[in-house]
Amino acid sequence: MEKRITTYVGLDVSDKFTEMCVLDDTGAVVDRDQIRTTKGSLEKRLSKLRDARVILEVGTHSRWMAELIGALGHEVIVANPRQVRLIWQRRTKSDRSDALVLARLGRLDVDLLAPVQHRSRGAQVDLACARSRDILVRNRSQLINHVRGMLKPFGHRVRDCSSEVFVDEAEAVVPAELLPALGPVLAVMRVLNEQIAAQDRQIEQLVTTVHPATKRLTQVPGVGSITALAYYLTIEDPARFKKSRFAAAFLGLVPGKNQSGESDPQQHITKTGDPFVRKLLVQCAHYTLGALSPDSELKRWGLALASRGGKNARKRAVVAVARKLAVLLHRLWLSGAPYQPLGYGKAHAG
Image 1 (spheres, rainbow, N blue to C red):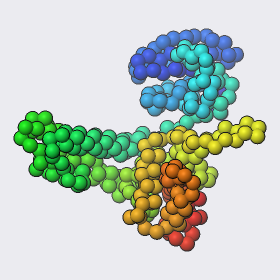
Image 2: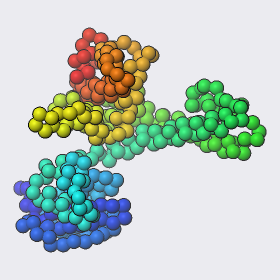
Image 3: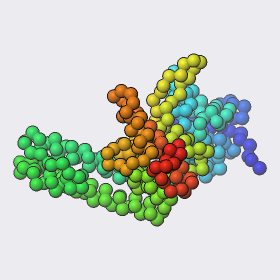
Image 4: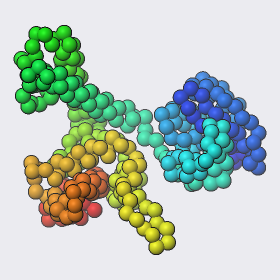
């Protein structure tokens, strides 16, 4: 028997403090409080309530808070504020009023909050490996640019080479007078190389032994283990989408919609969903349209799109190919069918 909700709690969460507003089943405010954003404070405060529906916005703390609230026996709703204009476009906005609005929306209609579903804890932990590798690689790239920039005014240049061998190449050309400045940077880059290689091994192990289904996704040229793993763990359950094209919308790769009467202007992509996976798919799209990628229906379609229009045609084509890739990967995952780049590739690409 489904329990009857008698209390509605809105939580506006910030890094240090959380504003709480409690409504009864008639919609009247019966309590307000400000509590510390810690597990102990939240548990102590919410354990006093019974049969509550607790509403909070998705964010940095929403995962652990949702788990804790659910463990206390309450119903928890994690709202997507970017989909609820009443939350993020109000003229008079404060933490106190936001908590009240969340509680009221949760009492009236949960669907108004565009609830989000957190990925599982295991998926979040495994996805952290790919994210950590990404930040290590970006820091290494910044250091490479720094070294190159420091050498040029002194008439020295490191030849074009891969990131993995850059340190060896740089040490051969760095003059003695710059060693005090660049020596520590090169030493840090060696450590970064080691840690990036360790993360690569960890990711390969995850793909091979923990999530072998991701191998289906790496059939597509340009889609490597990192992209496949991040895509797999972000979506987690392919059955969550009735149609494969919904995967592209989930990742923010479809144009927005702002139709009113006869007006229906062209919009940029929504950029909702996970920006990390979206970035990886765009990188894959660049490879697909590049000279080194093998022939495929997707490549032909993308190049034809890039050949039309003005100077931004290439950019639009890259985004369009990334969108097709999001659909294609979902279809391969769901069907288990082998990828065939030609012949019926268009059907695979959505």
